[in-house]
Image 1 (cartoon, rainbow, N blue to C red):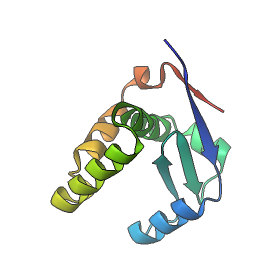
Image 2 (cartoon, rainbow, N blue to C red; image 1 turned 30 degrees about the vertical axis):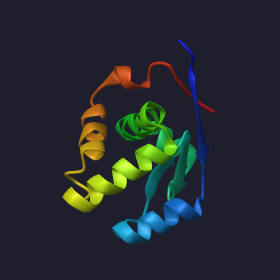
Image 3 (cartoon, helix red, strand yellow; image 1 turned 90 degrees about the horizontal axis):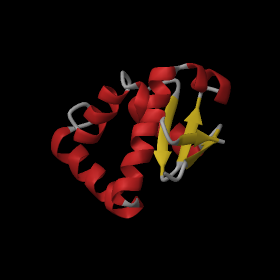
Image 4 (spheres, rainbow, N blue to C red; image 1 turned 45 degrees about the horizontal axis):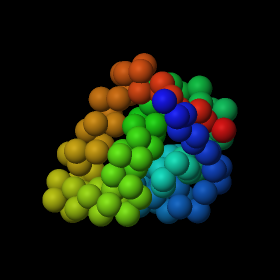
Length: 108
């Protein structure tokens, strides 16, 4: 099995914008295989195992559907059900308790 290589981008304008929309002091948001961070550093993020698993789940969702199709599906879910009931967020929250979700993933 090929390893999925994820990248972390600190001080991301994309994550900053999402943080403002969600009224949160810190944010992680995934685009493709890049985890964008705002208000939290790489080491703090990596120390939060549940949060890493959550974002890795999104990386795998992007890989499963492709970037454009995943974005389309995610936004459609968001419009229909909101953030908390969005099926992709429900799956990512469940993944927070799954140690195996990070198997095959390398964060560089």
